[in-house]
Amino acid sequence: MTADVQASRVDQHGKARTLLGGAFGHFIEWYDWSIYGFLAGIFAAQMFPAHDPAVSLIASFSAFAIGFLGRPIGAFVLSPLSDKYGRRTLLAATIIMAGIGSLLIAICPTYAQIGIAAPIVIVCARLLQGFSAGGEYQIAITFLNEHASTRNRALAASPQQLSIGVAVLVATGVASLTTRYFPPDMLTSWGWRVPFLIGAALSVFGLYLRAGLSETPSFEKVKDKQKLSAAAILASIAEFPKEVFIVFVVQMNGLQYYLWMIFLPTYANIVGGLDKASGFAGSVLASVAYCIGVPLFAYISDRIGRKPFLIGAALCFLLFTYPLLSMLAVPQLGFGTFVFVAVVGAIFISMNNAVLGTVFAELFPTRVRTSGIGIPYAVCAAIFGGTAPMVATWLQQLGGPLYISLYVMAVCLITLVTHLVLTPETRGRSLD
Image 1 (cartoon, rainbow, N blue to C red):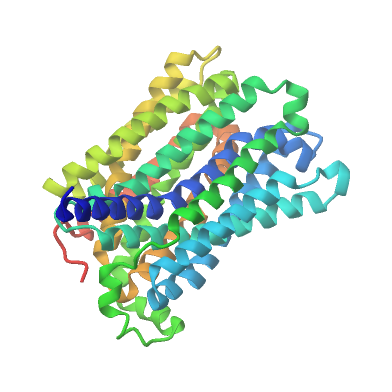
Image 2: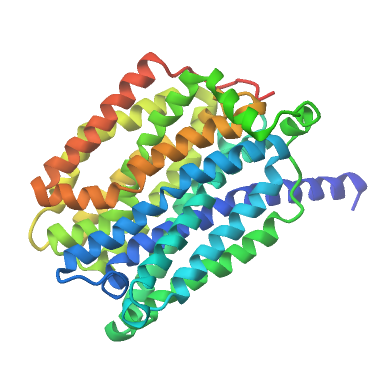
């Protein structure tokens, strides 16, 4: 073997580890959030007891939403630290915090054992995971995009968005196996804890992957000049109000993700009587469709641009949300119908998610890139993402699928206007 071949293999191994290490934390984040969303209906009565099962479920999803309050805090604290000290160190910190949150949920005693302390522990664990997630997304997407070439930037950065689909796929599979093979009594007493223990173990593996990752070339070029304090970096994003607004609006479409990829099995069970195991199995197929769509659309966007996919995704949900959700609100809902609705929605979501991270990175200069992405992203995620299951449950009780659809359609209209009027085509921009 020649020295050139050996060097090439080492370089390829380094690139593969960079991609995997950069994306794995996002995988952990979405596995944790998905598992909670999938299993909330099972442990709700243990941790959030109430006279009405629906009230317990809403309380459990409220803890899901409270976790999103940690995101803006994490974004305000961790993003400027990444812009000042680098991407690599902060990536290790976020994955450690995510693992601790999963472990706390897995070992938390029930309400019957420790009273009000049980839901408090769950809420604190969710807040810690939210704090971690408040830094993870933008640091990782910045890390991957800054390591990528201009020509194939969206494709090279797509593993992070792909990791969302893989995480939901794995979480759905774990939830499906857990609900299928644990007897009901065992499942409600302790079986639901196993997926959270798996999440904690995955975080340890993720920390190993991130050990030794190299800092990004773009940050290496500016680090000697980056003498500003973290607070000054945070303040400097005020120079980019239009870009901050665009990030906020694009992230509003996370609402569709949480409805389709997290809440849909529970929704189908509520309105159509679909058993939860079948709902989880159908969501596996939707996650597969998402995982195929993300790199495909990312590759195409590197050739034709980002805006067609942002506009196309918003337009599809504007037109088809109500027809699709209405198909689920029928007695004796069939598995095939659920799969069709879940897969179509997942394809629409993949159109948006294939490009949004790269668009975010291309909007800001290196010196404030993480902060410029992270703060509006986290604030918006807290408002529209974390509340999605709870709001959808409430809107369903008020007016069925029409009310939920009107909520989604309003978000899509705001998105379309923003993209047509304000959002630039960022394909080809230099990150330096």
